Amino acid sequence: MDANPDPGAPRRVPMTPGARRALDAAAALFYERGIHAVGVDLIAAEAGVTKKTLYDRFGSKEQIVVEYLAERDERWREFLAPRLDGAATPRERILAVFDASRDWSAAHGARGCSMVNAHAEIDDPAHPAYAIITGQKAWMLDLFADLARALLPRAPRRARRLAEALMLLHEGALVAHGLGILPDPFGRARTEAEEKCVALTKS
Image (cartoon, rainbow, N blue to C red; front, side, top):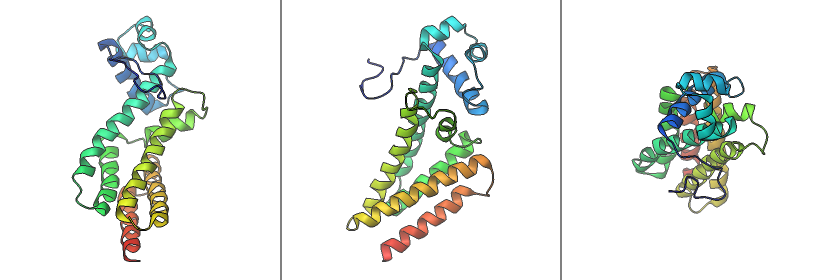
């Protein structure tokens, strides 16, 4: 099977057992220490593979970063999907995103959003991982736009403003969680989101 069927997407590589061990080690290191701080030697040592194996599988450290972020995004979407499917109303689906992010961050994200963290280090559009970072955030905004349109089907302008407000609340909660500067940032963002939804549906 083609590892990269979408010609517009960053190149992906198939996961052999050695590649999987290397990627798992890299993912933990990148998230805990930062991408620039982690070298190929350390990834190879943590994974128990040789540098040659690592380069044979991935070709470059940049490709390992691509795989790390792309897989993180895929896992998040898989985590979110059943939460959305299980919500009965448009408003509940919007709030389910905040609940899912709270639960995901509690289980996987003590250091905040991996995409936000990566963007702090990768601000070059020519980097192959840049499109994954910005694409993930564009996907989230599109998701909120779809959910807001379902809530406000006859008010497209208000729906768009709501989607942008929800995105700001969600991303702010992610950053605040990573910094540890506010108690329960997802709960507070969820409350704000619910208040906006209620106010707009009544107006």
